[in-house]
Length: 254
Image (cartoon, rainbow, N blue to C red; front, side):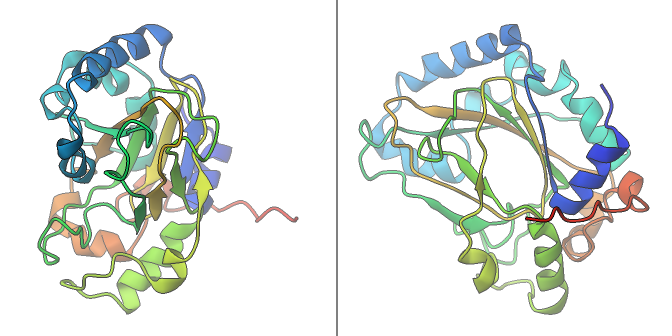
């Protein structure tokens, strides 16, 4: 099902859209079977490096992982937001390991925007994109389950910061007022899909359950993004032509 006008307006306001049960149980099962087999060989010493980049890197381009995006409506939804997209060649698999099984090796991730001032990269290097599509592959019913935390509307704050205060080479990933916010936990069931503007700041908590929390992420780019990375940090709708004229809904009253 394509995006409704209401969904487009909500995405423009919040920078986030969640579609429940978008991926079929059969596709989820194929992907989780692959990741589960790989996980059984995970060593504690490898967790920090995988946490910074991707777990199961050899599975990122596996057809059963790419099918979570390519064989679902996720690709159509991404195109509805961006107008046009580059093909997806690989996925990022992110696992929050159980604290009880791997104590102390995977602390919380601080608020950040992907690809900007990453601790493991040269701060002058940008690895940005346009839209993050995340597929939930394990139950996340509580914020203590290693949930991703995002800040609705934070893309507006970040764009203003990038435009007025930030310069290439700074090591700060977000301004202080954003860093202090906890954010909203992404709770869901296997098959739920998150569509999140690249500029929405987010963090990831520790996993206090006995089971790994698994997500598959697809970093989707507008075809022109690579040639205007800096401009896209400062103008949140540069890569989103279909949303440029979409009005934002009024904020809900408490």
